[in-house]
Amino acid sequence: MSLTKLSCEEFVEALASKEPVPGGGGASALVAAIGTALGNMVGSLTLGKKKYAAVQDEIIEWKSRADELQRQLLELGDKDAKVFAVLSQAYGMPKDTPEQQAEKTRVMEAALKECSDVPLSIMEKCCEAIELHKEFAAKGTAIAISDVGVGVALCRAALQGASLNIFINTKSMVDRDYAKDVNSKAEAMLERYVQLADSIYADVARRFEQED
Image 1: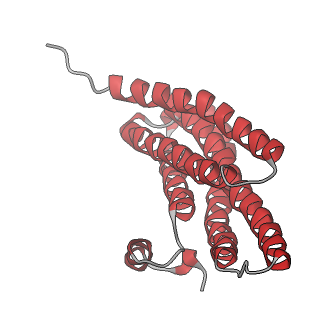
Image 2: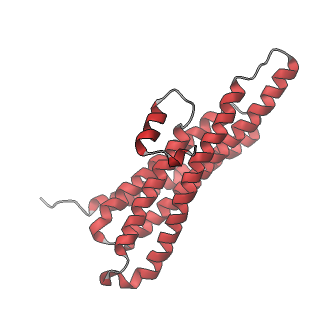
Image 3: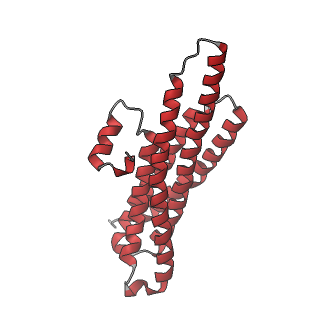
């Protein structure tokens, strides 16, 4: 069954269980989808408002992009579970003979790469979502601006969470050049987009500061 078809209660219970999936990657993807949806909601509340007539076309475009990101993130959450299930099984492969050892190494290396590539894609979608929150914060309705702050905070957390799922897998790779390349991409996204998310969040928070 698709993890995305579970109820909130079922998903949380599955996370808390000893089963290998869902795990941190799937949780990160879901959190990012929720964060993206919060920004998208601000866009929905902006549409049709006379005060924001000048930005209606932009809001429609951003909402369309957010819709697609939400869909992609949920799909990536499911994909993360599928690829990790393969890796989990690979850990249990026999290694009594040189042939078995070689086969186990081959299968694990392929699985480790897939288990790094999926969270890397989740990170990329988180970055796109953070960019959208910047737009919604600047031009979305002020009555729901707090939701932009919540949304970007969730996407920031998901970005960092997905990165840890990369680093734990690249650490075990035999192909160190591949591992370094994936790590470099993840680190570059963290360096740029954690800072951007913090800036957006701080901008939203400043709007609620009270004068003494």
